[in-house]
Image (cartoon, rainbow, N blue to C red; front, side):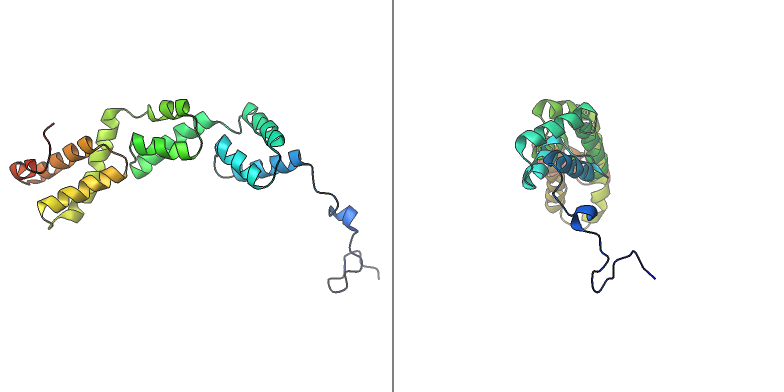
Length: 193
């Protein structure tokens, strides 16, 4: 009985490399398309992220440029949409301020004009509401600490998320005052608005 499957021990019956696809590697354009499609599966990427990945894998620059331009033309790469979705997700999910969001988008290679447009979605009122929510969540964990330490911890948490010092201190001062902390004592540590 002749079995068409290769013998796993001897290799007999295995197809020749030319029939198995083990011949010449695919052309760079095909490799670039495959790399981009694989990277875009599951998560959006910026044009720069894809260009960096192609360069890292040795795809020639002119081929990468051609493939990336084609992906943009058909809408598979859209840095403006990426930036808008990033701002929406990271602001609502992690509470990041415009400054931190802009910094993250710059590291991903998004153009400055697109960054400005995306972070412009957040107005000052929304940013302040988010800062208040963050402070309210963290406020309970600081109870029992002295006032100065609470102030530093809460304002520091907001600063790490990209909020300006003035906004952070104002929000923390208001939250502590609403909780019953003595605003006169807090005033010694906070600048007036």
